[in-house]
Image (cartoon, rainbow over all chains, first blue to last red; front, top):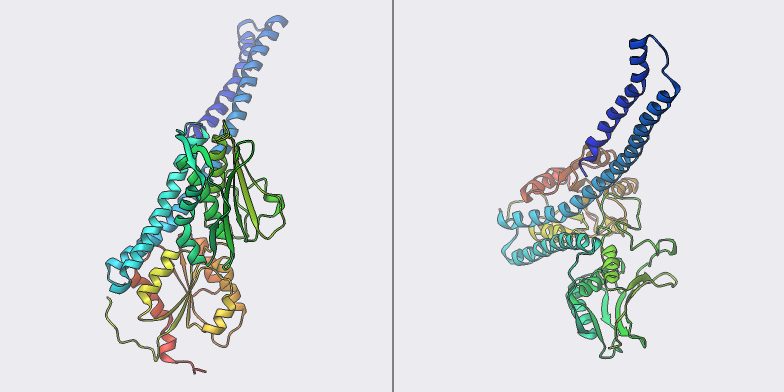
Length: 300
Length: 140
C-alpha cells in the first residue's frame, strides 16, 4: 500500500489544525467581546466536538502506523523474493554467456544448456507458485476436482524428482504396498503439494538417505498422504510453524536460502482449499514425516 | 576463446569451487576444466579436508551459501594456517559495499559479482595465480 506513506503525515497536519480549531472559539470570543471565556454550554459543546475530531484522527493515525508496518514487511519480503529470483537467473546468464562466447567446449555445451534450462524452470516455478499463493490466499483459486487414482499420482511425482534424487544420492520411492485407491481432488494442486514436499525432503536428506511417499484412503474415506525422509528432521518447537507464511528454520546466515519459505505455506493453503489438514508428524529426530489428509465426500 | 592456450604454470592449477548453485558449478566445470583442475562442492561441508586432500592453488567461494556463509568459510580457511596462503576469490549476487568489505576483512583476495562473463572470471583467476607461475611450490 504505497498510499500509506502519504497518509500518515497528512493526518499529522490535520491533527495540528484541530489544535488550532480547539483554541479558535476562545480566541474569537476574546477578540469580539473582550470577554474570556464564553458561556459554559458553548465551551463544552465546542470542546467536545473538537475532541471527537481529535479522537477520530488518533484512531486513523493508529491505522496509518499499522499500514506503514505492513508496508515495511512487504518491502522486506519483496527484497527477499527478488534476491531469490535474481540468483538463479544470474547463474543462467553466466551459463548462457559462457556458451555463447564459446568458453564452454563443444562436448559440454548441451550439458551446460540443460542445467541453464533447469535454472529457468526453477525461477518460473517460483513465480508460478507466488501467483498461485495469491489466488489461494483470497480463495480465488479455481479448483478442478476429479477422481484420481493415487498410485500414478505418486509415481509421477517420483519420476519428476528422480534426477534430483539421483544427484543427491538419495533413494526416492513410493510405498509398494499401496492399493488401487482413488481420491477426489484437483490434480494440479495435489501434484504441486506432493512435489513441494518431496523437493523439501530431498533438500535436507543427506546422501544414502531415503525419501518415501505414501498415499492411501482410510476407512472413513479420508485420503491420507505422507512424505517421510531420513534427513535431520524438524526440531519440535518449529513443527507447528513450518506451514506459516515465510517461515524458515534459520541458520546464522540469513542472506540467502535455497527456498523462499513459501513452499510449505503453499502446501498448507492447497490442502486447506481441499478442506484438509497438513502437519509434521510427531516422532523422534532424525527423520521428518509430513502428513496431510483430504476428506472425501463419499468413500470412494 | 576455447583454444588450448599456452599456460604460464608448470602444471594445471588446482581450483576449488564452492557454490550452492548447480548451474554455476557445472558451467565453471565445463568452461574452465581445460585450463585448471576444477573440483566443485555445493557447500563448505568437509572443506578443510578438501583443502588438505586436494591442496588447491585457488579457492572460489560463493559468498551467500546456505548454512555456513562464504565469509565464514574464508575465515576458517585463513585460521587453518596452511603452509602456503591460498588465494580466495569471492562470487556473489550481492552488490552492496558491506558484503565486499566483509569479504576482504576475512581475507578475500578478489571479488566478482554475478552475473559475470567467463573471461572476467578467468582473468581474475589468472591474476591470483601469478605467484604460482613465478614460484611454483615444491610438490610432494
